[in-house]
Length: 547
Image (tube, rainbow, N blue to C red; front, side, top):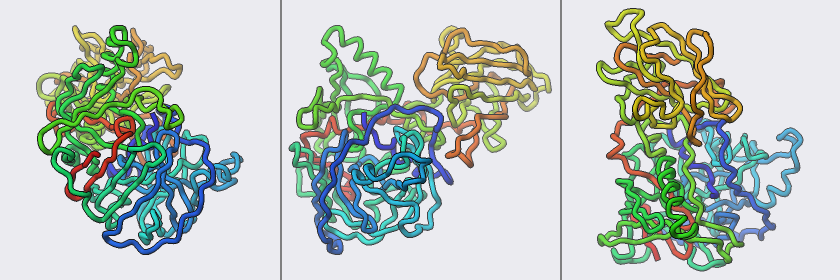
């Protein structure tokens, strides 16, 4: 599945100099770069009219569709992305990457900027998260020319340092999400008079990007789907998101409660939270023996139209001859970036605190206080990678003696998951103290560096305790505690940050404000659902017209 960044929600989430970032966690190689021939120069441009229409041909670019544009007079080719908000370009300078191969072929394909080009924007650098790595982004200003129109100076991001790409450039993106929270970097469309964003994928070889300052042509309610605003649920952007009435896998409904779908041309197939993906994968495997693999992988999503009827979108199966025999029916779990706000994290992962009361936090999030009754749950805001460890100290709760007995679980679990399983067994990498611990004890927890999933604990520097079973999950795992009344827990030390995490340190994460049962499940519908259709997005009336 070709996925640009997971979203440029990175800076969007409002952290001072980075956003969610888990640099040591390997990401799936979801290949996005393809060999390109040189393209012809753009025609002369005229100043943009407030209501003028723009039409730009799109070319298929290995799992996405690309448009040409000029920035500061330099020519670029960028992925058209209705799932992200920013204009991003890459930098590549020979000699700047420690003797790597010349930038010439890469820059000929995508276009390149340099660190010195562009005017200062007055905005601090940020760290962006990609499916294949992370990038340091410098925010600049320069003139934009697109579709024969000159939009004048706009704020854009120049990617400077890239980890995991094997080079120092990450391609260009035309992010088309318009509205954002106040703290977020300027969106591309928000800096223009454009109102309507249309992506026409009805005919292979004739794909078009159409932009206008006017509303789309008149359409009946039977062709329009209203959009919903996910910012109240913790999202930092007003994604092009629509209410869904249902999700079917192999023809069978998959009950997920409230469901919202983001229309995302920057994704190839379907992205869903890890918990939902596990359910999808289980049902797909069950149906494969009965229906065959191809039919078992069929996915349909039902959207709620303005007139109350349903619009069914189906994931295009198999290889597509019009696009180099590429596939668009790939379903993957969404990566789980760290460092998000509690509400954004819960929305992104589809989970929140489960089966225990969230602990109250103090001392700048380093101390989690157990509830007065029952079991409290807390989880760190960043994951552990192989070979990493964390250290905690147990503290007496208010009114308890300095040597109060402590009972509970401590270990590693995916976002939102509990350590304690059924019948007091370990659901993930948890160790039950069962009253063997006391306030003042120091507990170290470490994840093996050999990929085995083995977890180790040491109490007060003593003999290592080894997990009976390895971690049974492919998801990122977070330091997690579940403690009964009597003891609080202080987070003392955490993994050493990578160079892109210069100013970050781990703390206990605040719980989401919204109960899991009231939070919608978020899925990303990519090109596999959109090929053969034209999608016209009215960013003012907040509706999408499918033709």
